[in-house]
Amino acid sequence: MCGIVGFTGARDAAPVLLQGLERLEYRGYDSAGIAVFHDGAIQVEKVSGRIAGLREKTDNGAGAPGAAGIGHTRWATHGAPTDQNAHPHLSNDGRFAVVHNGIIENYLALRQELMDYGYVFHSETDTETIVHLLEHYYNGDLKAAVMKTAARLEGSYALGILCTETPGVLYAVREASPLILGVGVGENYFASDVTALVAHTKNVMYLDDGELARLTADSVTVYNCAGQEVQKPVSRVTWSVEAAEKGGYAHFMLKEIMEQPAAVKAALAPRIQGGRVQMDDFDLEAKELRDVRKIIITACGSAYYAGCSARYAIEKLCRIPVQVELASELRYCDPMVDEHTLVLVVSQSGETADTIAALKECRNRGAKVIGIVNVVGSTIAKLSDHVLYTFAGPEIAVATTKGYTTQLVVLYLFALYAASKLGRIGMERYDALVKELQQLPQKIQQAIDMNWQLPRLAGRYASPSLFFIGRNTDYAVALEGALKMKEISYLHAESYAAGELKHGTIALIGENQPVIAVCCNEALMDKTLSNIVEVKARGAKVLALAVKGNKTIVSQADDVIFIPRVETLFSPAVAVVPLQLLAYYTAREKGCDIDKPRNLAKSVTVE
Ligand code: F6R
Image: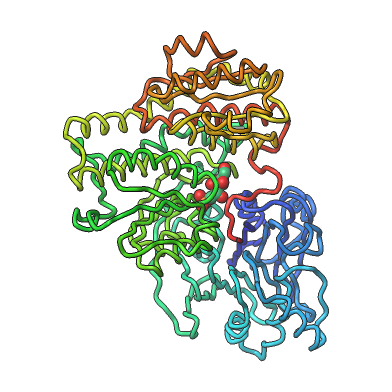
């Protein structure tokens, strides 16, 4: 949800800022801008639309010389995506420029106060209040003005600040929005995400909430909210530049779908040693687990659907009740959570505002929290008692794919780990399930290889409205399959528990209605089959997703896509892959902007 970047060094800032913004474009892409300090003044360039427009406007940065600058790519919250509302925003006296990711909740009161002082507003944004506050509080000490400004702001913000009075100096401030400092040689950076930094440096510092940083070409100094200097460790990023590039694929989404065998392997390999699930990253004693009366999995979107899938594995193997809750609902429902509740918080970005709020709510009620997170050093990782990283690598496409499958396998690992600690699984079953987990990467690869006919099927089943049905683990897959279809192809897709159709929704099934029937849970195959027969009797066109060799399905469905045979509890990690591809090819057929679907952003840092 908006990306910010900053650079100070000895070379021109604009090309670095533009490149950084391109890497951050997945966070928001309705307008963009840069501000660069040069010859005693700040030059601001901004456009509505994509970074490509900003490149063109600035002649690839050559039109905005200067060795210190800040940049922004926007996902509009306050005010339409226009040039005026694009960041950076400039103070009335032209001495300050600000970029902001987040939301200032008290901006209306601040705006009124600043207008009463005589400040003139040029945009509808909440951000503009920040730059006028800076001007208002500045009396020769920039750090003091930044601190006074930050103290007035309520809400979430990552700020980048440029000031004509302090050439070569940038300020960066963080409160509940991601912000990372890049430490280079003779140049330094900040960004919302490491993907914007890895081309220049792999040495980073993670700012904590309430901290601010002063960056010059040669120094990075971090202060707490009281203005005292704090020593921050420098961490090494393991992601490569190539990992954040398309690598010959037409879209990041396709690349990330294809990366799933490797990503799932990366999530599994370090945690299975000598045939046993080892969680080096955390250790829950059997006693602690025995104290757990219920597990809550909380998350948003696809991460929530990962929880819906994994619930079956955890309940079956650990015999602990599992509740899967949308984070945006959990936070407001006065949840029945106490010190006997274990909360699994699932998030690719680790920055989703609703998920963070749900986590805090549960912690305040005494629950122990395990974060299942991809982005190292993210807010959810910091707030959790234990973190299990998913090791998916950078996920750039807005629609998650490898982020989701790696969340699933980490949840499966947790299920096996806990079941074994609790002594609730026999050795033979345990060994068999560990082997099944180890085979997931190759089975995902087979699911990709088997389905060369998907581009054709995507054309055949594209329709203004689709149904995705399934039971139990298959229902969880249907939920994720329908979400993928909706978000990137803009087709209405309804996911339904197959057995529920006849309780109302079957009224919508008519001639040629496409129904995608997930039938990979072989124990429930006959039941889902009867639902297929029901919809076919009403004229539906059925595309089934089944385990290879299933002849009954072939005889009933109009078309079938297959996955290899896989342990039912873990089957969602394989079954979802053809549905990701179906959504991808459908969106491609429709000419949609696959990596940056309309109205969406990768990291949802607002409520
Ligand atoms: C869908 C998608 C979203 C995210 C959701 C949570 O493809 O990407 O539904 O899953 O916004 O995001 P994280 O996992 O970053 O908390």
